[in-house]
Amino acid sequence: MKAVILGAGEGLRCRPLTLTRSKVMLPVANKPILEHIIDALFKCGIDDIIMVVGYKKERMMDHFRDGVDFGVNITYVEQKGQIGTAHAIKQVSSYVDDEFIVLNGDNIVEADTISDILAGRSGDATILTVVREHTEGYGVVLSEKHRVMKIIEKTKEDLSHSVNTGIYIFNPDIFNYIESTSISETGEYAITDTIQHMIDDGKNVNMVHSEAMWLDAVHSWDLLKANAYMLDRFEPIVNDCMIEDGAVVRGRVSIGPDTVIHPGSYILGPVVIGKNCEIGPNAVILPSTTIGSNSTIEPSTMIKNSIIMHDVRVGAFSYISNSILGAHNSIGSHFITETGEDLFIEMKGILHRAAKLGTVIGDGNNIKHKVLTEPGKMISTGCSIASGVNVSRYIPRDSKVF
Image (cartoon, rainbow, N blue to C red; front, side, top):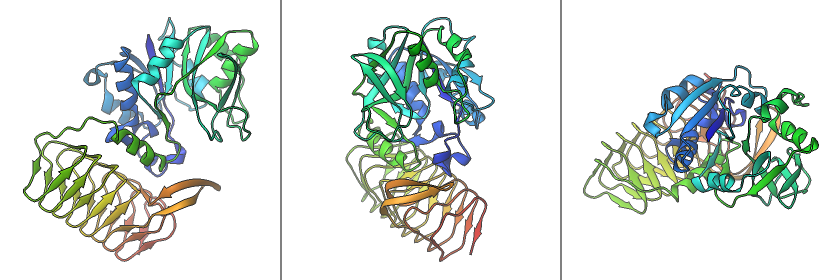
């Protein structure tokens, strides 16, 4: 069976992180979301993958290439205009001649998730669902026994707790139905409309329920929850690094090669640190934290429940909590992130709720000494922040703040 992974979209609600990469390339446990999906497919014996790419496709293709380093074979198909999931699937019509599995490239799954739909598939199409107590913002499935009767997108009513994961198994007949799919009110060709057309046409569309992992990182701050979840499940590896006398490493910790942990530093897992990093002296790295490769955490800095991407320097005496720092950031000493709870963050005039968040910082910023970020305030990409600044509002791209 072939797998089709939909990875053409940007992920607007994950800005500023997606200004420089697609959402599927955002790191969780120091690996892109997409890599977790490929790993799960490989474990299920699916090694022939068609990747539908679009936004920032070069970054994705440079990382995965032909897939050989990941044990799979990857074919890339471009969706030149991101106008819906049905349109994306249509792009692979000449590449499949048997049943195939479709997955969204921005949802984290495990092998058991995929094996559930493989084992339970039946009829003309199969949808994988999970149960969620709160379903606002998700598509839900109404069914009789296991037969799907209706798919309702992003309902605000409590009609069903069976959430559509966006994982499907189709046969090539789906392409005929895609051809007759009408454009939706949002201006897209949605695969859920295609499936509803099949149902209305008397086709047998079935639902398989899974209790395995399925994580949907809708907003950038949702990556913190996904990161913590994945760190609780990873296999710790300590390879060719240097943990100097006086440093303490406890719990489930992975440390990459050529990384140095200086004396007085304390690391409490679950934590993942990449290769060629320098930590401390006297740095404290607390649970649910990942630090990307080629990063430096200077003395007496504390980091907890955060994602630090690659090529980042954090100055001495800093405190970072519940935050995401993009790649290639240079941050001076005494950098402080304040954390808030039940925050409402505005994006393009719409308020989005963050249960708990410090800050989210994009790529390539130069932040000087003694900078404080107020809860939920973000810094975009390419910004220069002078010493002593309190970040009390969103800082747009390429800003200079004095």
